[in-house]
Length: 220
Image (cartoon, rainbow, N blue to C red; front, side, top):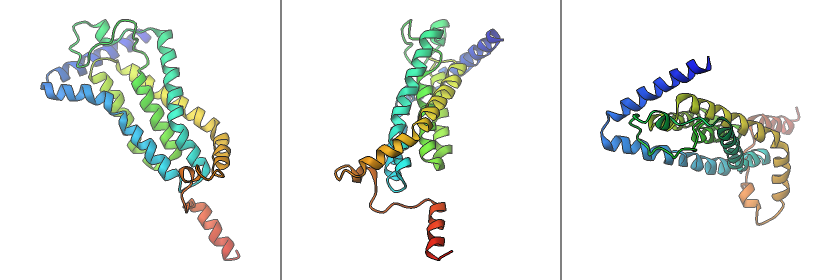
């Protein structure tokens, strides 16, 4: 069963990379550069999530600030799995593969994809702090993962498992630490120099809290 899945994944990888090899050099170079730079979009979203969280509550601020840390933890888990599985990359196992990217040296293993794990972790951590951008970050993560197949350095199963590992690890550690993070932010908010970084001047109450306040003022 496993060997059949690996064979199908290898065939898909060869088909995708072969199709990309037919494109013009500039397009192939764009794929090569984009697969490395696309993760920068998540860095910008981390900043936007933190800035937005300042207007909501301490829990959201804590989760937004912790998102990069959750991503690093997910990356370390993915990297550890690589050392256990030790699967060759498609560009290593299939020397005739017309890979776009420079093939990493032997010993730089393929499964799971660290780039995909980072993308999955970024997406999950961002969704926990900012649910409305779930679709956007999911698309970003999928594109980043697929790009690793396109440039010939990963199989489809590498990036699929990478996405799942990253999302799972980031979700678990973020939710597990949500309460301590909230308490930490509430404590740090009392320090004058740090307050502007953690709380906007006027926070916007979530809808349910806003309705509760209105009912209280109305004497209901």
